[in-house]
Length: 275
Image 1: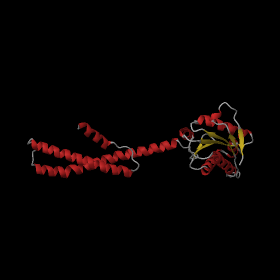
Image 2: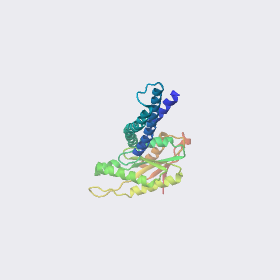
Image 3: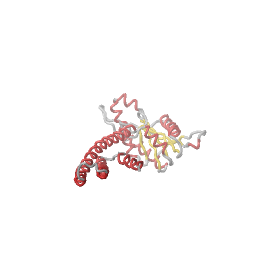
Image 4: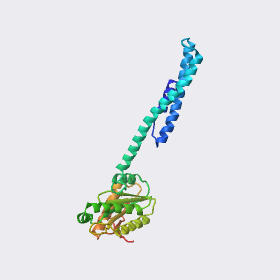
């Protein structure tokens, strides 16, 4: 009996997580009501016990009236005030934790996922998937010629273009200074490759404003298919080789790596992706 009462009390005092201030108030009222009823019941039991041992210093009827008028309201007010105060604090901590978690997984410049978030989701995806690694061509020249502010604008615009082109079944991330990555699941490899080419062309058609006039940039990419169980490191290695081939072959293109995880030990076949 004592153990059951103890468990019940602990359950009532467990705050848990609150999605909103309304949740805090709703649960506070409900818990305070139950606590007030428990306190009222204990008060009545104490009066009847004292009355049974002839220790009650005043009439039982008057005592019950006082207990009924005072105990539930006072207990309810005290309980709901304390619960709301603590509940609001817990809610604020939960919101802060969620925001911190989001910030820790988001690239602050582009708003895309960062390398950590990309790696985690890629490794936990148990479906057929593919990865595209994209690097902005001659980015150092952009910084040297137009300044780092213009360089940041290029990164932002490329990131936004990738987010616009690739649908919800894809995750876009900035994984390095001027390097981006996209991976898809639940999408045909041909469709993903076509979207990569669309993104490359649209980026090449962008105009970036600068003090000395507008300029444009191009990107190179490496595209690779992955097995469901493959982890980020192995797939990224092959995509990066294809990216390197795109760079050395003239830039502004996407190179497809035909090697998969089943082909380890064989020579990697690289082929230019043409629209």
